[in-house]
Length: 445
Image (cartoon, rainbow, N blue to C red; front, side, top):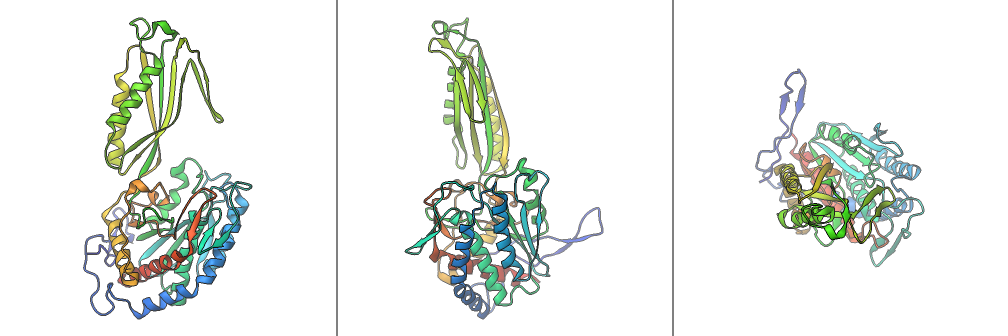
């Protein structure tokens, strides 16, 4: 059954302030003719409002895609934000921009809010794309129901789904008394560093919310609702050894050399770190007498008849939970510490994205979305295996409140000239979202 219930008031320890938390224990949904399993008159009004807005949605998608908003195009991202402000203020939202201190050379983040007594819902999109000014991206076009263009799926199509859902709720009178925070991130594709500080805004607003919806696009090859995403850490392996003439390699005098030691480590990473949800990737590396890792690439010096003294490899580690991360890093460290004769190796890690762990709260929210979807279109909404989805801003929300992702339209080809959106998927996606929000409002006491 669903893990959704009325919000109990609790007193925050150490203060007299009364705060509210979501009770994620299983409860029975409301009974009666307008149960969660039945299409109510209000649901029908919302569905009709979404359908009647299809032409508006396509025009908005065209407007968004034709405005370049590469992450470093501050003016372009700001203009996309202005389009969002126009639409959101027309629905009664108050808006403002926030600029984290680390967010230099970025446009900042747009925040829109409505205050009310309902469950507090957080909706998250991002305004930027990977296509900077002058980048190789095709113009917006529509052919045979497929829209193409830079950022059309990642994630300007998701913006249209989110705004279409809110617009339908507004027309149905459902936004009155609602509590919704809408965050449009300005640098999702190339975030400012350190990432934890740049994304602190998401954690802060999540702590003031009860449920979160993120509108990254649906993957045509693995459709469904995202309840979990893998976290990402980078790793750097550096090996040093003695050098000398190649005729002395693998002798007790010279040892194995950095090339053989790095090969041993890399092969053991391949064979020893094999388990569901865990991957270790080598992004790039080199072996030589002298290595310089520069922004433009690795510069290597060496000779055919010289034992190399250095090896450098960099890659990423992906994991479904923090426990899996910690265990994998310990095992990688143990592999490095063994060492062949005459070599010294060091491996270092840096966390990039936390995992969006597939919590019971996330699964309960997905279950509610699936019931809504079955009611509307008889289409199941299974949980997508985390291995098929990369990181997203949902990773910074999960663990604080229930969150689901992948609520945008169906499409693919992200970050390429082939990026596309199936226009027929926008209305069903927006309708599911709007009715889901309506049902969450109805469950608030």
